Image (tube, rainbow, N blue to C red):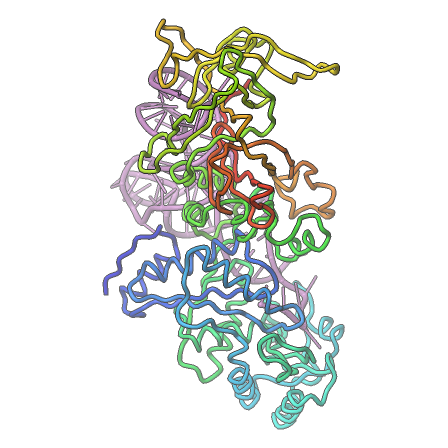
Length: 553
RNA sequence: UGGGAUAUCGCCAAGCGGUAAGGCACCGGGUUUUGAUCUCGGCAUUCAGAGGUUCAAAUCCUCUUAUCCCAGCCA
């Protein structure tokens, strides 16, 4: 069987190629197995792109979405819905219906019985502390539980009664009988079932015993016919256990677990627990705060799904520990938006400009292209009158040659409009500039001055009579340090300027823009209207990412 | 001090015995009504270190070093 491989190559795909070539598998089946205990983040995106990407690229390959829901005390149906939406938004479709590990609880229970009947599992009554003591340490072997050799019938009876709810939480557990002296801690008679009188978001109150990850995951994979079970590096030690379980129960399918390194991103946290803490401590507005590295946060911020997919493609898949620079992600976002985002003008920190030689009552409609290189994106009408706004940063009373904006007594090009010259400035008592009086050259619309004068600078502007007021939210990294995960107290390294709010104006053509639609506000960056707070009465724009800026000053 | 893994440019990452891909970042030139974009050029005689095998080694063999993961009835 030949495979048409369009995705990026990596060691996992090499393994798959080989399995196809040798005939070990005819088709490939992967799965993305999130636990519904938090929102998906950029690290999950890597796994999603890997698993669903393989399903897309290999003939007849499929990828399941399976919720690994074996711990009802931490999980919630709200997360299920959010995760589903995030995967879909990222651009992927799972095979058939959504799966849940809890769908297999009955089968899992039967396999546990099989293990007990073979004397490969037993009910243990050690409490949590004792269990830990008996397990030994990294350098010293554990010792057998006193319950390890109890009769099979007794374990069978106890396990049945555990399910029936006869015993208290923590009083008993089912353990695999492997090797308490194993150098691999995971093989020291791991717990495979514990008692939890908890309501489960899928199975309700049907169960009071819940299977552990190591017992559940491999069997769920096998039941779904998964060929390659891809997970992160910290599960390498679990692989012998994964294989042990499948080797000792009556299932035919033996998926292969392959581990790859998780993604670390500079200045960001990718731990659900810690991200949850940011939300609970109100350090951010929610899981979808635009500063969050969650899929929903990035979406709200304006990152295109395609840019996130491209990023995942560029970072690759290996077993090496890595920390990717933020610049790499931002490059993908800019690259996508550069060609897809229509242009518009917005003034974030406005100061008024009066065109003294322009007829006061007049307003003309200038035509500006939506994109400088893509004519198919059309044009828009931009009103121009004697009163305009420009950004305070674009004017100086005096400046050196390198400053290419408006300077008193000098000329500058107004983007998509005329060349103007600053004549005088008006200030208030505090010395703050309130108005800049300029003259314009009527012969410079769409052409350079006929006398050959060179006007090097171009600045953006918004008509003062017809604009739309808008709020701009400028985002910076949430943390001051490259690796916030290594910091004990997150509060100490929180960037107090991670959100800066500005009140300004946008050109009138943006009055009825759509939420989450990307625009490039020329010379400022890429923005999109906030999906939660922007309304027609009060526009709110999130800065997705600034434009690249090579001006050193 | 037990076990498992990983070491190729500032950050990712190809490479799988035949003489170091690519991306991001960075540095320069050009174009430009966005200091954007685009474009041209530069950027590892060297692959954690030391030995060895070979005509030939990042790739094979030794040893050393560094880093990460494992002692939840979490996933």
